[in-house]
Image (cartoon, rainbow, N blue to C red; front, top):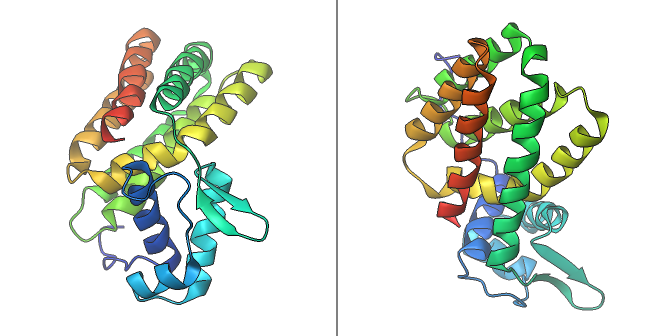
Length: 211
């Protein structure tokens, strides 16, 4: 993996990252219209990737599409966002506590490889860090034997996903984030579920600091 040249962000990813940060930090205010033409001019890309980014933000719940008007930023409530993270912490740590013994060691090894790759200077650090985050949380949830808990945890995870992405987009210290993930994986591999749950809960709640 380390021999790969550093990838250039795709236009749609560039547009998504830009809009995500602008929306969540309040630089684009709630209710503001998001015009494809204006955004494409600002980012010097075509309207197609901008359209793709807006569709992704609609799916994330940060943008809404209004008939005969276009896309606009939804009202964001800091209290509601915190509640989402708190719900993710409660549900996902419960899922980990129940399913830690079911997580295959080789799956954990694969995540460590991805984390290590994202620390390499020639990697696409942000993209691989986000992918490591996605894979780790999904592995924890999918290993839970309780079907109802697994479904609830996944729904909340999907709703916090864009906010968690912001941590990767908004911090230059990806190595400290990766260190948190390594410690979680290490605790799981050592069969210390309680420690893993504590580390996971702390890791989830740190995401709020970047909103």
